[in-house]
Structures are given as C-alpha cells and as structure tokens.
Length: 409
Image 1 (cartoon, rainbow, N blue to C red):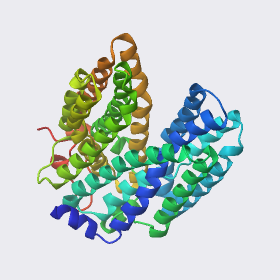
Image 2 (image 1 turned 120 degrees about the vertical axis):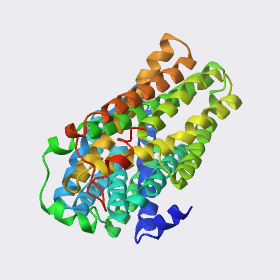
Image 3 (image 1 turned 180 degrees about the vertical axis):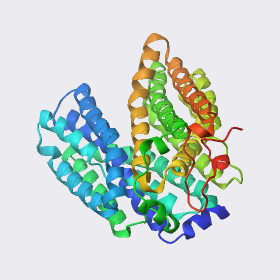
Image 4 (image 1 turned 45 degrees about the vertical axis):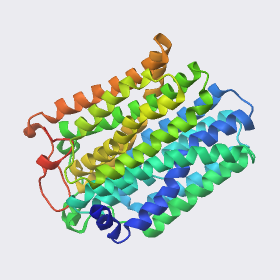
C-alpha cells in the first residue's frame, strides 16, 4: 500500500480524485436517467429510449478527441467551462423537450460532455512519476468502477420516489458540481519537465499513431466490448432462469470484485502486460455462462471482476506512456472514444450470440471478443520498433521495455 500513500500524497491528487468521482458518477448515470425520462416521462418505448442513449453515446465517442485537442491547444479551464455550461443547459431542458429535439440535443450533449475521465487520466500522467503511475491508474480505474456501481443505482432509486424531471436535474447538478470542482483545482495537464516538448508544437500524427498506440487503443476497445457484453449476458442468463430480479446483485458483486482486483494489482511490485491481462480476462469470462442461477453466477463473475480494473488501469497507463506531451489530450480522448465504441458494440454483438445459441453463448462471445483484441494487441506490439512511436512519459525519454502495451513477455 506504500504506492497508494505516495500517490495520494502528491499535491492535489486526492481532491482531484474526489471531485472527478462526483462528475464521473453522474456521467455514468446519464443514460439511465435519460432512459427513465423517455419511458416514464414521455411514455415512449424502450426502443425510443435506446435511440436517445445511442445518440448520447455517439456524441461522447466523437467528442472525446476533439475536446482533448482543445485542451492541448486552449487549456483545461476554457474547455471545462464550455462543457459545464452545455451540460447545465441540456439537463435543465430535458424535461421540456419533445422526443425529436431530445434526440438531437442528446447527441450535442455527448459531443460536449464534461471530460472528467480524460482529464483525470491526463492529470495523473502529468502529476506522477513513472514509478507511481501504475498505482495511480489503478486508483483511477477503481474510481471508474465505483461510479458504475453507484451512479445508475442511485438514479433508479430516486426515480421510484421523485419524477424523472427531478432525476434529470439532479444528474445535471452533480455534473456541474464535479466539473466546477475540477476547474477550480485546475490540475496540470503536462509535467514541468515536459514544457519544452509541448512548446515545440504538435508532433505529426504519424509520429505517435504507430502500431504500439494502435495496439493499446485496440485493447481499450476490446476491454469495454467484453464488459458491455457481460452485462447483457448476466441479464439474459437470469431471465432464462426466471431470476432476473437478482441481476442487480450479480452486477454489484462483479463491480466490487473489480474494485478489489484493482487495489490488489496496483499494490503489486511488478506489472503485467496489457495483452496478457486482457487475454486472461477473456479466458475466465468464457465459462461464466455455465452458472445457471444467481448464487453460482455471483461466484462465477468474481474471476472476471478481479481482472477488470487491472486491465482498464493498465490500458490507461499504456496510452499515457505512448502519448507525446503536446497531444496527450487528443490521445487520451481517442482512448475514451475507443472505449465508448466498445461499449456500443458489445451489447449488440453478445445479443446476436444469445439469439443464435443460448444465454451462456453471450459470455463466450464476450470472452472471445476480449481474446481477439488481446491477440491483436500482442501481435501489433511485437512489430519492429522502427515502425512505431517511442513511449513518452515523465522522467525518461524512452521506456519501451516497461510499457505495458509493448511488453513482450
């Protein structure tokens, strides 16, 4: 736990993780809040709610790199203030908009979503040393898991007691508080010893978008494809068993296992390569479908859960090491886009597998998707160093041997 104490002792790190958790929890709950509003407030179908969720997700995926590039060129506070204002206007207007306008507004809101996750990752890369970074990103991935456990659950509970309009306003207020807190802290986006590299201007895209970076982004995509598919497979399996009401408990067990796994992994002295962690996650996910009722399913998802946060944290670490300081915001935005695309693809992919086979086939499809991404990432990372960009990070000019995405072990 010494590594965690060192990370939390970094000036500004603990407050940053605290306020960004507020923003990320609200952002995680946004799709649930919009779904409840469309179904309960507008009295429309779940298909209509899915259209709004898809519009928001598409906006987030497209907006990540654009906002990251704006942070690189214009600074953090200007981007945060713009996105906070956009979110306040959107969430205040949600109860007043007819469906067609809500669909368009959701896409715009996604484009201008407060980049709490990306800012946290960029700040971690700037505020920590290479030795501290793995523990720091483990904490960041644990933070993400906590937001997924808490956010949607709070929105669902609130929806049972207050109107969907109040829930929407509450989500908007939480995004405002979290985003304003990050703007007030104004964490550094580059380390002090990266100032010269950043002042040199934006390096050409071909210089940093090499095979190692593509490998890391592929594994980011594969990880969230797997995780999105697992959520659907859990619901399908328990529905088949007539126990769908227990799905929330299984998801909580999965999330808590991920938190525990992230904390354990961040405290280890030696990292594992990203492709290996993702490959192991895929392997342990495939047989989860053999569990046919909720108690055994709770046990079966623990293995996948223990590997989830470590895989997400290692992907984030790999991307930050490979990103030149002058374009780190854009690169981390690309990672967010890759993960959003994975979340969007995972559920339909697994849904097809379930329709063509049995619910257990959903876990197999999700695990195989993770394995395919791990194998692709491993093969790409083995490409000749002359064809890839060198990793960048604070304290060293070249750390290819220590980069999780490029480790050949």
